[in-house]
Image 1 (cartoon, rainbow, N blue to C red):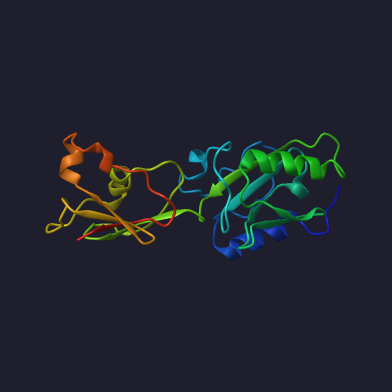
Image 2 (image 1 turned 180 degrees about the vertical axis):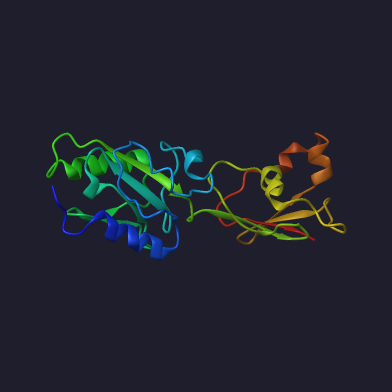
Length: 204
């Protein structure tokens, strides 16, 4: 069945969005995303039963043997995606498995026994931030449950004059403290809290 616009056209839109790198091929009969899609190791880490899709996340919709419905899509700020024939679909606040079931039901009007799989190829809606005296500060995707110690491992090490005994975690209007030397010595491990979306880990 032919859709009103091709998968290649949708692919071009995602490339313009700046989220995926490909060699021009957007169709495949494989049940997995094409190998040439660069996902920075994120897609494999997403739990399809627990991860909640959010705005700006990039998904790959795979419908077995239906190339016009197999394409990458970016989740818009309103949490919706657009697919051929179906139109707008709410993807935000659903897990990949929940969205898979929903799309299967919607596609039943057009395809017999549709075999749908939804992959999260890039996490953009959930981040934590490393700031201050680290060799590699910046924003990092919060894909799986991540402790402060695990987050700091992304920072490329501390700079020479970093105060590792009084690291701050800024969460909205709350501040938590983390002593790197204590935790790595097995002491006061309750400081090693799980990060939440938007947390800033600040080293001064």
